[in-house]
Image (cartoon, rainbow, N blue to C red; front, side, top):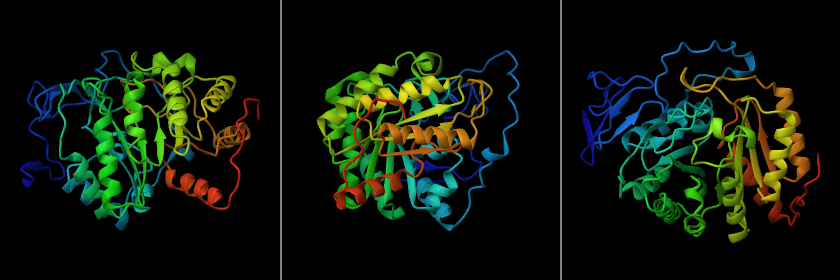
Length: 358
């Protein structure tokens, strides 16, 4: 096993000595395991359910993503492995990983791969890291971004309720390190809600980022069946509104998963709430159940419906809405920023804030 700064680097198919269940075998989905840092976590975030999983309808043809391959994909994958980076592209089983990595964009997950929350849609492992942080991570991430030649990078993270500031200072350090090495790389921070503490939100906003994102995930009625009880629909709206008011030049962004049982009226009402919070950018994508322990898919939204929802969003005044079955939070993020910047360079006025229906 090779090493990087004294940390074991796993080869393909090699199991981490720390990522084993109580039986000594590699942890399966829903089982507890001990991490290399010494704390316990649940594989894929949700405990194994004894009841047989509900049958899920066969995926429609429009949800088939191409296999990840290509020179750009392989180059990014090599650097991710070499520097022991956690990417949400892999941890969240994103279907667009090949397209994004080949295009020179990536979403890097800070502060490890174990989250203190357990949202019922998410396949990230759950546990309590007990304050653990890698102090070298900001500089390692910045060096990796430079080596990958990224022109747009999304920094996201697990929730870290075990840290006094939720990891805000760590975020800010990573963003500043990237900007110091590659000033022209655009940085989006897809952050936790920081328990609603606005001082921590402002710490990230002061770091030199280009886009601030916090995902509302679903409509208000479904928030607590879908998200961890510590998350909140209104809290996310408040965080996004405060971020925009604090630094109006920084774009704000959020994402909605569809197919969880929401109605069209609820989708429209959520869009209106987001515009009332002055959110600039919106992504809409299909929820796909990552394991049999997670929430069922209630419906598969058609490409035509996604196109209609995008029309609604643009009519309400969002600068851009990327909407489609395979869309995820950071999908085509660099294109939305480029279009916004091009409009500002040409002196074009932003869409007015509107709360009427599209």
